[in-house]
Length: 516
Image (cartoon, rainbow, N blue to C red; front, side, top):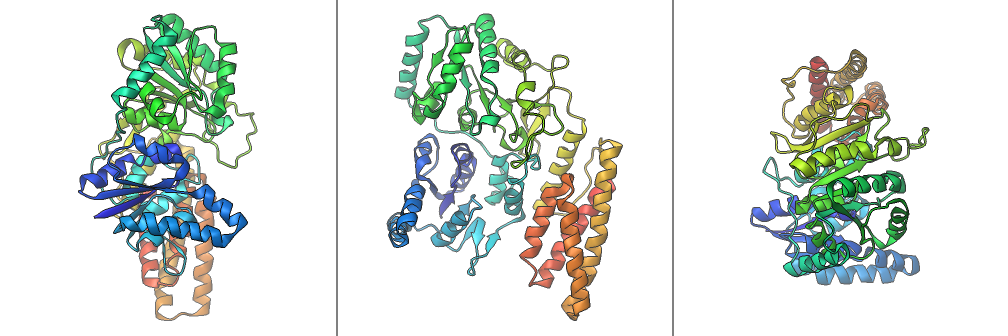
């Protein structure tokens, strides 16, 4: 079967499509990949792609501003000549935006993931797709790595997923080895890469911290820092040079993607913010130490490579929401200290393993990525945060949401909840109220299916709004509230489907409440 995978997102997210592509390829399918034109060069870093369809998004937008007929002509030329020559029999659309849904319907009617019906309304092929859409809007609410969500949205089930990008060519590696040696002149026993930039300046670890860490690594381990980044981040390298007194190699803005991949394979380690470079390193097998700040958190956007290190500030407000206005001047950026990172990095350099315990009073949460028994990527605490409320709640979410999204009967976890009395009481109250409202809605939906009385309809709509508001306003259940709102609204015209949905949610909140 010819399958078109659509991912119209950023560099890092595009790379994280690799396990889906390899999983589909392993089933014997021919794979086409549609991505934005400005990221098309990244496909050279990927495996198992038979044909690439770069969408000229910028050109289309520019022509729309000038002449919509010209823009439409460009689109038809691209779609008719390029896409239709591939003639996909199925689309796996991993982009929930309106353009992504439109393109999926333009390509074929058999769509897995984010689709559109004949009336122009958004349709999700599974609860996993709905979950991916709503959880991506709320920071701290998704307990699953994006790769695992892509996998389940694609309908690949519980199969083994491998995140392995294409190996750089011998020529590219030789070129980068020569460039490194030309600067280091044999002084270094090896190299450590530093990715100074991030997609948002607020998510960037301070340059002074990078410099302090680099100096310790050089002075105590003999590994020379290598600076990586884009042309737009050249000033960060200049600032680093002013703050660091150790020799280093500055490759910021001096590599293309092929060269970047090649140089990463020469590194002993990459220290990075939450970036596309992090995902590239993970897919190449380069060890990663990543810092997650502000809206970035490792549970969903962490590196998909077992044994990676993820560090974040130990603050109740971290990670913050996308539209959150920080009242503490982004204190998370300064809480992750160079000494705390070096504690773990030193152990890794000397033994090949991250330190098992955190130094006293570090103010950070430190995690090692591990593959869970169900095949998903999870996190193991190295800083004593395994049994705190936040982690315990993440584990409960992983347990219940997996069953709910797979549409199987929910069962309590084997391990008793370790939540504090305060969190337990809060969650139990919300689940109890939601259960009562859902029970009433189920009864009213049954009555309405038989005799659509206006009074019963009004009561049903009132309870619908109460459930939606209750879950949406509870921080512990905001994603569940968004999912409920999205899924229930798509079924309002079919009382049989709506009644079945109400029963699913009722059963979930009942079992979840009982386990607390």
